Amino acid sequence: MSSALEGLKVLDFTQMMNGPFGTMLLADFGADVIKVEPPVGDTMRLTGETFLGDDAVYFLTLNRNKRSVVIDLTTEEGQHLAQQMAAKVDIVVENFRPGVAEKLGISYERLAAANPRLIYCSTSAFGRTGADSIRPGMDPVVQAMSGIMQLTGDERTGPLKTGMPYADLITPLLSTIGVFAAIEARNKTGRGQRIDLSMLDATIFSMIPRDAYYFATGETPGRIGNAHWQIVPYNTYPTSDGRHIMVIAHTDKFWRVLAAAVGADELLADDRLKTKDGRLAHRDIVDAGLSAAFSKQTLAHWNEKLLAAQAMFSPVLNFEEVFEDPRVQKDLVVELDHPTAGKFKVVANPIRLSDTPTSIRRPPPTIGQHTDEVLREFGLARVDGTQPQSESAAPLGAAR
Image (cartoon, rainbow, N blue to C red; front, top):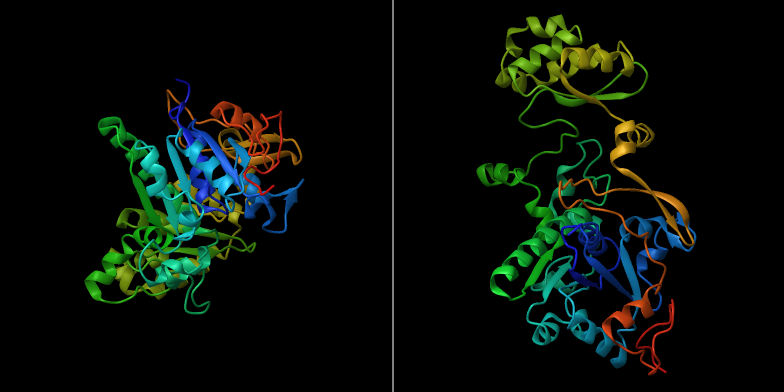
């Protein structure tokens, strides 16, 4: 076995981000992921303003290692074809709003009846039950409803969404753990099962330990920007060249190291700041003193000084600095060659397995690129009765 999930076949009905990100993880681990797209393709192919070839970079980022099959699930013929395929796979993944999978003939109940070993993973914005279940929802809406937006920002900015689509990312990370657990359970019992996860629940779960503060006090944690409500200093400070540096001193030892390295003798001499509780009680004094110290020199200067002192810190890096770093280039950045988009770079899966490593075996597919190839493997004919040809993007199950 060259990869951890080699031999597992996944039928992927997901679109946009949270579903495709999860199935990409499965594909990175070696699963054969068959992406089922409607005739117009995954909505993400046309989302955003940056394109390479025919597809948005958003789509290209989320769909490597997959094969694309076009099936029109709005027709009886297309639904029947999808059902036949689902009877022969290990895993089905969908992220429709509750009720849509049933309308399209690919509900868990229908597919599991024909394939008891089927693992069926559903993700949705607000879950399958309750008044909110039928609401449309995307990442910013979920961030607002989960409370994470209330935590982000400061009193000046008001609530902010995170700088990346947090709910869209944490949901597939957790749902993929659920899929792995279901695979292990099936190895023991021979039976598949349903994994059900909402973006809302996943985001609320991920706010640990902020929930503990609420349960203990009955209060919503305040918005304090880059600071921390229980650790001081824990913040970003501007340098003389307009850059920023993040520092943390969570123990008395790290506090002494930091203050000495930046030459803040007056802070070290202040008896009120010698303990964690003292620094917490005098947050304004600590922040003002460190701000004054860091403003005297450039980011490069402080980077050298704090590295030598072994303080806990980092410059706030821009993307050029992140992705041009030699280690990141070596370990995380991979260049793919796409038939229409040409050469472009993606971030590789960061999980390192010593015996069954992840891999990128194929670039993201064009629409329906593998329709006939997959049909042949499943022993299925096209809806019009003809045998599959070579590469074709014609929709399967389309009305004729």
